[in-house]
Image (cartoon, rainbow, N blue to C red):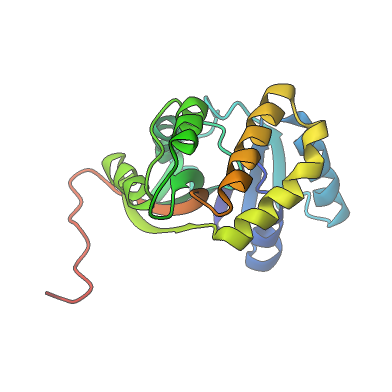
Length: 214
């Protein structure tokens, strides 16, 4: 049985992994409100023994080294990229996978206002998708894939998010309103969310063979 850690709002994925693939899942977050809803859903689906919902400080997660075959962080940025990559790698089993969401630059030109916003938000430069994969490689992972939300997908994401702003913490709601306003001012995505996947790589491990056998 595979063991998975779902961080942030990964509730739907946690349920699918438990129901469809028989995984043992820990659904972790620091937001008790989110966890209450997740516990209710897990209970209603009879998954109490398969999905363990826990309140966890994701900056200092109290899990064993190598405990998880995969770690899934969807939908929200709650750690800096360097902290996330460094914190989660020891928790992965040999050949374990990390999948995480992170903002990226997209399109041919990124307006200065967008770059400035994300640098304030992240405390670091806004990366291109290929640069995100480079960070994975430098942090002890073999990069496997990266895919960012397209215009229509990002529009739908913001439409679904907007009604929830009134229930969000004040600081988070302020950031999100500015983010959505910048997106709408530009008329198309110049920054988006990418989902990147990397495999835990071991020290001294040989690089994978080239796909063209050359």
